[in-house]
Amino acid sequence: MMDFQNRAVDVICQHTKEGKLIPIKLRLQDDEVEFQTYVVKAYKDLSHKGSYIMPNGITATSTIFPFDCKIIVFGREKIVHLYYNSGDRIWRMA
Image 1 (spheres, one colour):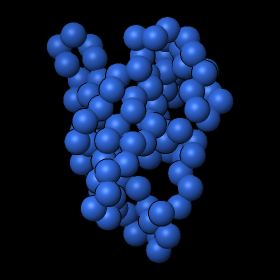
Image 2 (tube, helix red, strand yellow; image 1 turned 90 degrees about the vertical axis):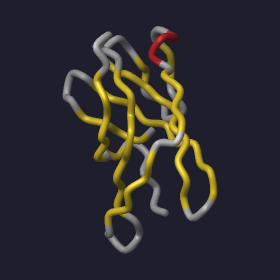
Image 3 (cartoon, rainbow, N blue to C red; image 1 turned 60 degrees about the vertical axis):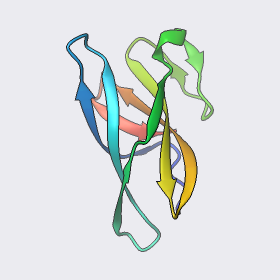
């Protein structure tokens, strides 16, 4: 799989009536530039921590909503770091 750090990704998410985001699926291009879709098996909403620095060096603020998401890639469980920037309305992989 390619290095997706700080790259924009397609995400299907749910907006709850309380205004929370829940990532459901993400879609990435593989090394052959074909799209692969991954179902989010579990997620951890990290936005409640307040401002903090994510693994890629980006500071999460009140306009950035970070998540740790568990997906299955080639039969192996993997944790990916996603964040949604509500200012530019783009999901990125950290």
